[in-house]
Image (tube, rainbow, N blue to C red; front, side, top):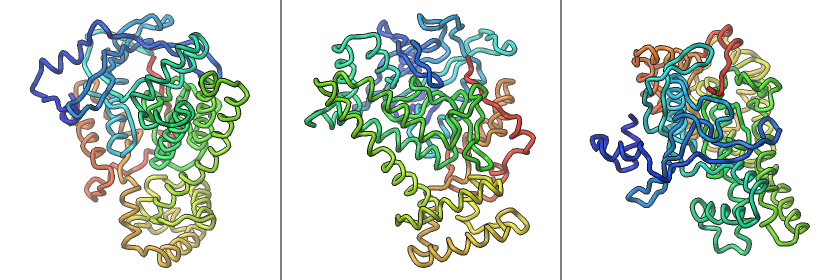
Amino acid sequence: MNDGLLSELHISSKNHEEILALLLGSESSFAQAYAGHQFGGFTKLGDGRAIVLGEYLTPLNQRFDIQLKGSGRTLYSRGGDGKATLKAMLREYLISEAMFHLKISTSRSLAVAKTGDLVQRETDQEGAVVARIMKSHIRVGTFEYARQFGSTEDLQALTDYSIQRLYPEVLNEENPTLAFLKKVISAQIDLVVNWMRVGFIHGVMNTDNVAISGETFDYGPCAFMNAYHPETVFSSIDKNGRYAFGNQPNIIKWNMARFAESLLPILHSDPETALKLAQQCFSEFDSIWVQRFYKMMLLKLGIEQQSTELNILVNELLTLMTNLKLDYTNTFLSLTYDIIELNSPMDEPEFQTWLDKWKKTIESSTGFEKAKKVMIENNPAFIPRNHLVEEALDLAVTGNNELITQLLSVLSKPYQYQEDLKHFTTPPPEVFENRYATFCGT
């Protein structure tokens, strides 16, 4: 049970009746229908192993969906069993909590409960459900479904509801649908920029896994990058690297184009004008991405100014990190605390040349004291290292929760570096990294 999240929802962890009422749902519980482009191909989908129990309104008037994942077959299970394994649901809990404390918009896990069932995957595994909360489970794929299989009235009703629930500030705009499109694009850019700030690879950025609320969700094939390389992929089903770390900006742009296509019938009554309005949105996408991405990367370097010259400094560092196979998180951690080990790749002459250039930039701008504060705010010391996550989950399914509890504690303060926790910053052995793969869990 996530006592911290219960507190944020203003629910007492001791109030078992209220918690039980939340998790039992109501007569209005439902499995959501949606469509989606999976690895670029369009298909009709739906919640095959999840049901939305209902909406919960906090005393502060914040509205959340509560969903049970792994709850059994639905109309959209497509031959699947609708179940989930204990390991997969604990993984969702662990990574979503880590993302929350990394200050990245995310779904969160309220609780994981064993079902008592055996779930058949590669082997028989213990079954479980996770209670997940989000601002909304409405996806790009929900709009694709409305466009392809519903009426224009259905699409308008979905849009009106989504605006009122998530972006009510656009209601007074001249064209609320256009303003809504821009808001969603902006939220997605911010989200993916934040993923790349911490080395997160979602692994399955299909349009049905893109929430219009701008929250990260679906933590099956996700992973965190160790040695920096833009082509890094861990998902077992991403054979061609479509959703590789460095391709995530291109994919979110592609996904937003599919979202815009879905809105065309209500973007303007004249189809040609609607298309032009959508195209204008995307003519600005690349410049917005570049501005926000480099702003983020420069903050990781303790630099608050922006310029083309400074962008080159970032590019040079990323090239060095690729060539020298530097750990993404630890490189910035070393720069933040001025810890560069002798005879390490960062001690190489080519890196030292870049380091001198960076230090001169800091000296001529904010100074090292201010730069360090900025870097601490933007560079986590601790991320969910893949090998530690797997070890913790393997132990947890046997009933040994010691490591997963310790990992949750460390990841609850990811920006507070502590020397006695240094082993949590150690990358996995290369043999682990080369063989590591993540799975969707179905």
